[in-house]
Image (tube, rainbow, N blue to C red; front, side, top):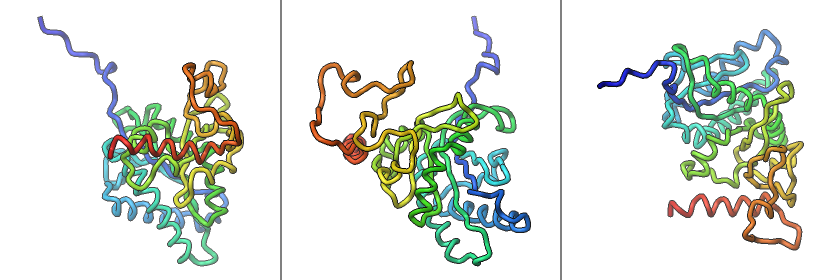
Length: 276
């Protein structure tokens, strides 16, 4: 006896790699210059996509979601690593070149960029938790603070990766030029979404992750038990301590520990060893 086909609503939607970007202080740009500045950013993004061998989502059906001061771009899932490396570094470099060439009267352009992966639903690809999640990462206080670290060092981009994107690509060893030490682990929170928080990983091209940490409020500093830890918060909202998470023993330090540096090097060895 043949089984009846599953109802359409039980099918898992197709998964996409998602890249979202947003221009810093777009609302402060004089209205007469908004359109030209945004067009410049679109040109920069399109050129960098082509340079990285990535498709332009504006040419694909329903794969470009314009938000006025930014957009969400949908890609095939197999290019997820490429929209992290080399795209983030090349986009940062392109923004730097743009800044050198712009007129003094033209607005300064800095971007926040979020990368995630997940299913997107609907015939026009406009629904699903993945779209919500990448938008909240992009709007999080953590990536805004990371962008301030970029501004203070003369850079023009801060990226935030979801835990999904980070584990699949960076921890998985698929980003040739980026290792865990190039990222700062943080908790993404949005000021007007008090119930939202998510583990994320911040990257400013040209900076080690440890250099971003001092800009992050509410995150464990170097030497604290949570620094560099990837432990998930427990039911009480607190991450388990190193001692409680390893009942069988472990390494003990009896001097100040600079967690971001030590943790970064340990993760790098763990990440790259299987591929050698």
